[in-house]
Amino acid sequence: MRYKNSLKQIVLPVVLALVLIVGFFIGKIWTPGHPQASGSRLFIYPQTNKIEALLNLIQDEYVDTIDKNDLIEKIIPEILKNLDPHTVYIPAQDLKTANQELEGNFGGIGVQFSMQNDTVMVISVVSGGPSEKLGIIPGDRIITVNDSTIAGVNMNSDNVVGMLRGEMGTKVNVGILRRDRPELINFEITRGSIPVYSVDVSYMITDSIGYIKVSRFARNTYQEFLTAMARLKAHNCQNVIIDLRGNSGGYLDVAISMSNEFLGKGDLIVYTEGKSSPRQNVYANGAGSCQNVGVTVLIDEFSASASEILAGAIQDNDRGLVVGRRSFGKGLVQQQIPLPDGSAIRLTVARYYTPSGRCIQKPYENGVEDYHRDILARFEHGEFFERDSILLDESLRYQTRGGREVYGGGGVMPDVFVPRDTSALTDYFFALRDRGLIYRFALQYTDDNRLQLQRFETVTALKKHLDSQPITEQLIRFATRQGVPFNETQYRRSLQQINVEVKAYIARNILDNDGFYPVFHEIDEMVKTAIREIRAGNDRIKIANP
Image 1 (cartoon, rainbow, N blue to C red):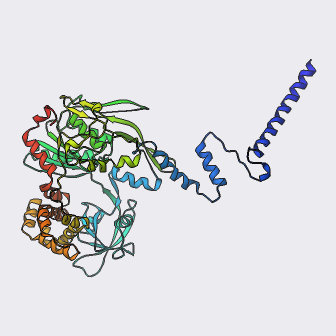
Image 2: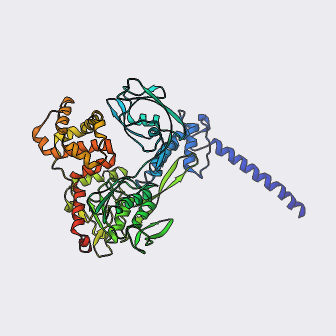
């Protein structure tokens, strides 16, 4: 018996090994429909990762040479498209640019410019920036960059930006042509940190009402906002208008910090929740510096994400008024996740909800293209012009702290609806605007009269001077030379719009946004509505939504 057991122990492993070897070779050379006689070679790829197996198969067996990495770059966005419209892939070469806007600074020379007659003209110089320190001034023309001529060569603005921006501490040589100098002035500029401001302007729009325009929720926005509010409160600001129109969002924590400034201790600001993210409530801590300041928030169809968090917190807590038109409807929270090659994915990890329990995310089940066409569908449906055209989902009805009805499922609905005003929009006006003639004329007028205009240090004084000049008549002659025939009937209908816009652009060229907004607000119906509502008193917010 012992002899037989020993033989079995020896022979059995040998037999099993032979079976495995034979089976392996059979598997290598035979597959149904592919006889060995055909001469085809078959490779078995690991099936634990189907995508990787497919990529390897294509790389090894495809009829043409394929760059596997290039294929991966194209595949990832296609995969993410099947999730939601805001989960996106950012390639490594685009990540720095994508982050700059939110991080609040970039490396550059510190000028704002515009293309005039195929030449780069400096509009303004960043205070304390590299260019100002070297003496570059508004009105200068940049003719060369690093010995390459950029004037008169049909170069677009993006290419110019690419040449002037760069790593902080690196140098760039620019050749400047100045109006009173016949030869080029050469500057070697060391690129520095250039701030990207997200509070475009803050000023007292009346004796007691302040105005703050916030264009994005970037890393520095909260500090900029606090500085702006401190300046307004020093001028007796009792109510503030926060303009979030066109603000597509940004950092969630910045919107929370700004909301906290207006709310009392224990007030719910927002909560988030996702499959892998348990519900997190965020409450005001009671340390806000604006709790005794009235607040009105302006929104429109392009106000999204963080803008909607701030508007929703103010509205659901009955803290102030929301004025304007229904916001975009983005109620998803993204987290940026870096990948090993320097790229990143902004992955949706949670939904956010306003204090009443609303998720204001609009539907996206029909795909990304349909999702982004929603704004056009609203316009065609008449929503921009009539509040009654807005379709509300009765199953998503909620109540504010004071018992007012609000709705989820598609943006924040304003307390006071302001339709788009098209009464002054004529074909003649569109011909001027769409060809950029109002802006181009304002640029030329500023350049021709710069020494005189720079004497005015306040927008009030500058506006008074501009009102005394025949600017619109000069604009008409300019437009006629550019091929836009004068239409007197349409001109009279659009006169105020044209007159205010051209003067606002001139004021911006001299005083930056501190000049533009106070002039432009003369025809801004939403701002004027907000002022009327504030003056009428915010008691109406305690009753049913009008």
